[in-house]
Image 1 (cartoon, helix red, strand yellow):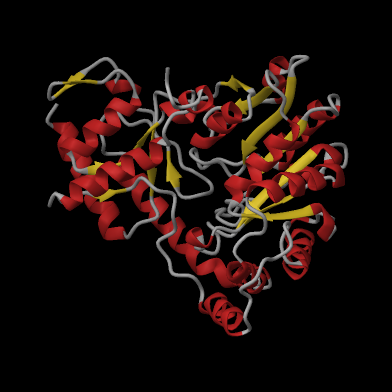
Image 2 (spheres, one colour; image 1 turned 90 degrees about the vertical axis):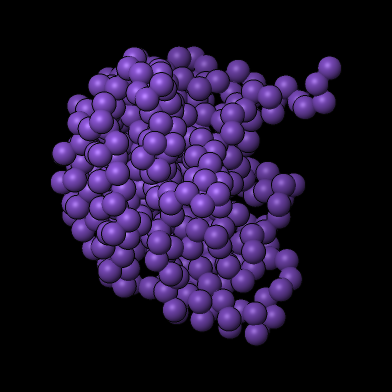
Length: 396
């Protein structure tokens, strides 16, 4: 009899970390690997945010915070949601967590019973399906393709809904595709969901600010679904605060209270110093972050041009986030240097071992024909990575 629970045995390891750890091991062995695996900005945290953390330490913010976060932080989040998204949320509707990942699973734990269905448009972030498994739910996938910019339609959503459907979970801007839903597309989805008020929409908007000229719209801004939507966001991506582990949810009052209850038994309040620093971050004008967005866009354009020369890559131009998600179906079923390429995970491992470039296969994203590259790296690394991949594949 296994000592490990059935629940844990159903889970997979995060493929993102599997590939990044493999790349680290190869580097430690003296191999020159360029890792484009993790979704992590390569910028430092802005100085005023760091100063707020120093101040918090000196002011002795070293004790427990309220479970849903300091009131001042929840007020700052409330003001940010109004300023940037025209959303009205009271501080009592906000729960600050140890990263947006915890915010999502708080919501799932609060609403999902065994056997409930959660709709996941594919591709989806690797942890979504695993989180659904943890809480006893069943994932229902809606397939998309590069030809539709990896976005579902309202008609597809309507067909996927059953009497067991309890939630819709998606990200816009999307990790891994770099696509986002337009106002018109979201309104059509909102109109479908409004016909099913018992279904909760979980809208992951963590890449909100990393958007190249498009309008970010939160589905919660459509009044017909406000009362059934949980907005998820956090500090990691726009503020380069990945290690500070601050995320948050903004929900209808009933759901916010449930998230507070869940978190109170799991972790209690998030790191107090990081919370105080997050207040300063959220009070910054978004224009103060534009230097990062401008640099990401420059890198995106660079990589897009270089990928055009890589045989067998079908790629669209991402409009947000910092990922490429090329379709590599051309290589599926082939054998490269003794490696049979059954799916994108095999191909990603082939590139790591032969081109010494780390990326993440699309199987755990729900798209086994695609691979994900992060371009949150220097221009020099990106140029060299694309050169290595091209030279490697040209041999075959």
